[in-house]
Length: 333
Image 1 (tube, rainbow, N blue to C red):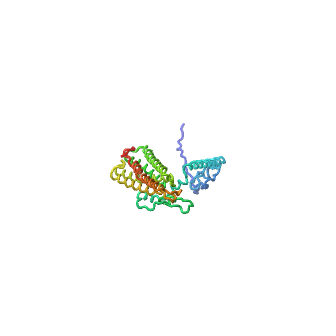
Image 2 (image 1 turned 90 degrees about the vertical axis):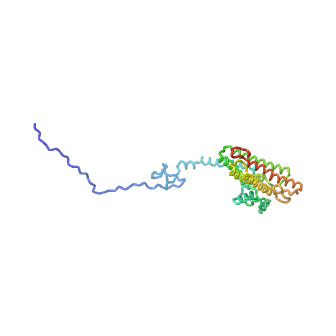
Image 3 (image 1 turned 180 degrees about the vertical axis):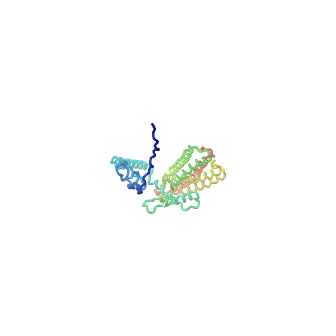
């Protein structure tokens, strides 16, 4: 059977619709989050509107649970009990500490200023031309009371001795470290060595006051302050020795020359300062009983003051400065 030939079928062309009106879609933005002050809780859910965790400017807003914890009555009761316990503990420590040390009296020896520290260091290192040496009394006090160190350069303090002791310990270990011989126990050994010297010196002073029947108003803090001023000269000697001979004791003419000067300066300083503590006159606040001191008794006190200011100080200062820091151990050069 013969089939007729048909032309191939063709599909009509596709025509896409062309928009006649151009429409713009507005850009959607989240509203700015509200700001909350510290302690103000945000809405439920812990997030302000807009889904951002912070307030205006990215600030931190505490969680509602935290604010609730602080305002909880149980928490407030616990805080009050903790504060009461701390107050009771501090009062107990202060009362027991005051049995041995007077806090108000101790504050007197740390009442210093920058000008006082500079002036006092100058007096300790260059005491030759200093005048006068007597301590000043408070004009407003009804009882004889000495002015604090801030107002009187002749008043003893504990700030300079404490800082000098600390500097001496750190300087000794620093020189050992520069020589490559630092050991951790060197800090403890140096502190023990200096503390032992202070204890021995206080015992010497108390023994002299006891056997010579000295009834002056000089307290333990006064004696501790005067015995601690030697560390100023010791620091100068150790520094020069460290620069000249590597910290190997005082050795050398330069080291011994510096030691001789600071020793004589310290002795003269103690001789003039302790005169009003160990040798009070017959009608001064340092002699509260106003007893007449016999000539022989005064002569013995003068001899003790001279022996303490020069002979005793020479032994203690030589002990502190003649340390072989280059070997990293305690040894006499």
